[in-house]
Length: 253
Image (tube, rainbow, N blue to C red; front, side, top):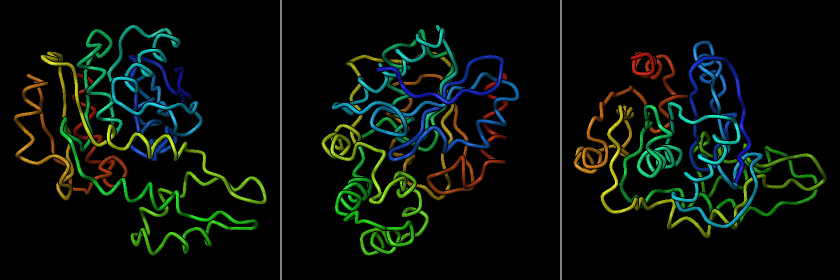
């Protein structure tokens, strides 16, 4: 699958991969900043943003989408950065197509299976009754009982498009819901290993990269470096200055 890609800047290629229910546009100012030194290609994962909808949300398929899109853009290698689900896609690409990944950056995720709250968010989005004349404020209020955190509701509702009488989801909720088990999991081929440079940036107030996960990271990524940013899970948007302070020297090394 060829993914919708937002491209900016010139220089060494940097592929950026968003998390579940996100989109390439979420990288916004970060992509523009990195575009001062890199050719930045922010991609919408399948069933997200403006990319095509299709069944299959396992990371092997999602990584192959990235590989195919890189080839279509004339790239035989790039630095690859992914956050959350995008981090798992980036890791799978590095483990299955290491020749494509010049260096790897993983933002606040580990190569392990999670029982994360994301499944409940998908169910809540599927349960939202879309009615004629519904506004964003109406949708925020309707989603409140299932998703009390205002910031998360706002993030999820970025995917609700108000271009007609009845709003519509731009994400393929049914395919994502069907793929949640694969999204929570991480199952690379036996013996897979990436020997290139890798940087794992975690949020200090997040539990997605715990000490218990370090053996898994080290087992797949022998040269993994680690950095901590004062933030929760959305490290790159919550503390972009500190995120860039960790990221830019690694990309330049």
